[in-house]
Length: 630
View (cartoon, rainbow, N blue to C red):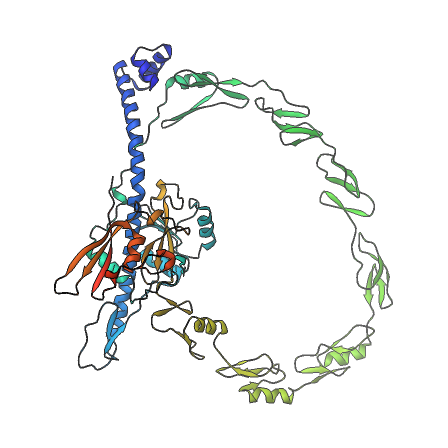
């Protein structure tokens, strides 16, 4: 700015160069140069101010869009599932004189002539949940196969998601992480006693009824203005005139010098630069080096490159080597008792063959044999048994052992050796009886005397059968979680009212769910947790809860600046309906806890439900406040 003021007041020689640079590069007149420079100065200052203000609002607005998107997904998945389950219940066969009008979360069951609860949940398998979400939103790309639990854990620990591949990328730029991993027990919502039927579906319906403003907003955001930088012809002249290469990429310009040349700043109004040759010398033993840094690139014979300098080779030959390269240590010939293996000498250590008592360790050739072998052409051949004994054993299906044992062995299945030949065998009587008495059938000895068990029995591995049972871990998991396991072959886990089956165990409505991390501004931010990446809790029953750090601090979704809500009280117990606001412009956590929408102490931190929200014929609903869009 000071330089521009000097120009306007008639500055010195440097200022004339500035004018000349503008005129040569863009063909501007003197008055036009002054106007352009004033505009650049004013616009740059205004843009910085607007950008900072915008950044304060962008996260708020995009966070609201992320919350809106997840609410829409939850309402869609739960609503469709609810309709199917309700339809299945209503289509049951039965005879009823009259039908009841059932409330939300219930359907009329014709088989019992009464309203029955319908428990609806999100998919409990991570890949199924990811695919369901993918079908509910407009995506640019997605990958719902496998899992990336360890990668997500590392990103959460470092608070940096910039290197993580998102599971789903939406058309509005938002990125969703941790969507394809199986559901987990959400710490902040563990022990929540709110287990109402179709939990979250009623809330989603209320949002659709009273919050018509929940729409996508990312496409309406105006990107911040970028500062512009210009190249000047004078820089090209100085650079190329000194042997350098002038590189220009749009408005980004710089000078690149050749090898053994160094870039020098000449100063001035244009920060001009030129290339000057380096005058350094190579060190001892160096055949080629960088004259600017003195770093050696290659060495003379008898020297080796260590780091960026050359050192005289003095490597000793390894053990057994009679001649080697002093730089590399590679051996070309070996001493007696050693042999060349690649570029080094190894001691000969070949083992003598069977029966050999003395042999050459390098060639393996035998010099003498034991009493059971004959020495033939440098190897030992074992002495054999009598040919008649061999013939008797082999003709009965056996194999004669070597001299001097000469025994008949290795008889075929169903046969055993009596010393000189193989004789046929039968299954043991007690083994046969044990198999048959335990609901099995014994095969012949030739078939291996195996006990074949009939259903619902299985082999014990000891030629007896036992009745099959359900998997012990499955039984324990089901029973420990409050369910009942049916007997084999059904092996089904049945859960009590208020609970549902997930991965073989019974869980309450709001204890399990998905922690979805959302990069609310996509590629525009740094993808840092609690700066532009925020967690959202989606319980299996469809409840969407903004996440907050384990330390309980209100950052991200739980901050008023990012997701502001109000709590509306709707009392229809009297003759006239009463609607009023219990809370206005408060955090989601306060409204959710005081309305009874969430009741866990870990999330609510000592807050209790407002007495008005406990009235039977009344409803307390959370209404998100649409943030101001810049």
